[in-house]
Picture 1: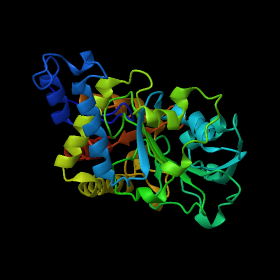
Picture 2: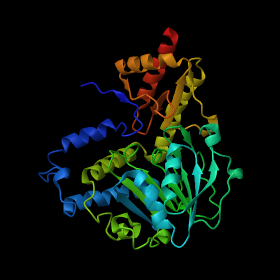
Picture 3: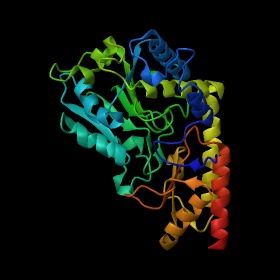
Picture 4: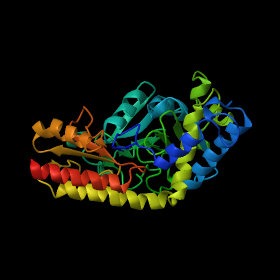
Amino acid sequence: MTRIFNFSAGPSTLPEAVLQQARDEMLDWRGSGMSVMEMSHRGKQFMSIAAELEADLRALMSIPENYRVLFLQGGASAQFSFIPQNLLGDKTKACYVKTGAWSEKAIKDAQSYCDAIVSASSEDSNFTTIPNVADWKIDLEAAYLHCTSNETIHGVEFNTTPDAKGLPLVCDMSSNILSRPIDVNEFGLIYAGSQKNMGAAGVTVVIVRDDLLGKCSKLVPPVFNYAEQTKNQSMLNTPTTYSWYLMGLVLKWLQAQGGVAAMEQRNIAKSAKLYQAIDASTLYRNPVEIVSRSRMNVPFILANEALDKEFLTAAEAAGLNELKGHRSVGGMRASIYNAMPESGVDTLVSFMQEFERTH
């Protein structure tokens, strides 16, 4: 069997050790005589998986006791609507920072429930930078300030936690959660889809501070109500049990790698190698302002667009897959999440240099 280097933006590559353990436990989880996929979500075996999952995430992120951890369905995109429904209370306004396609979608969905104020935007630079914080216009009467910490399509990332001026800071961390240490206390709510740094698709993690619960209208269905899901341990309906299990394996793998701080150092090294190769080239170019460059998603453009198809075909032949950029921006994109080994980046850099030499 030959494994490729999968640079997909999500669902993305998983640690090989996790896949091997899932394979070994597929038919018989810890002597239970059944697969996790067959277990009752109310049974003692799966309840132990769920308890370990939350405990490990709390440990990896140092989540304080006054925060609830939810494992929900619907993807992070569903939270674009659920967040205003849960957090507005008696307020009618929320502030948003627009830094790319995903924050733009969050704003659009929130407009159905409130006055979604764009406090800052980098749209005029084609989303190649993070807006200067000094220029943000935050309405202190708003219910919260929302940002997207890493934009997968445009390849921009916050390198510090924004100042929300006293408002609860809400952050979509779908594509860089667990890639660097953060102080959860600085946020009112964090949410993230699982399919990039935490496991397979199917789970959305919501980490929410206690004081923000209980503001949801009774018209909102209980499964979309954070307070109700908290009371029911994220099990108001049957959860995506196997995805919970896979996430648990990824978190154990992260612990074995040295935790989030160790992972950050690897991510710094991987992204630095790739950006250095791009910046030293005359064929490749990254359009993002250097201080706003993402460690997770590295877009790059070939000087001659006519070479794009040949580049992708040759890359796949070399075992370097899913490098095509998002259709909205074109070019190439290498997603180098936690599970992408440094050897994958080394192989990509060598391929790019050889492609440039011959073209």
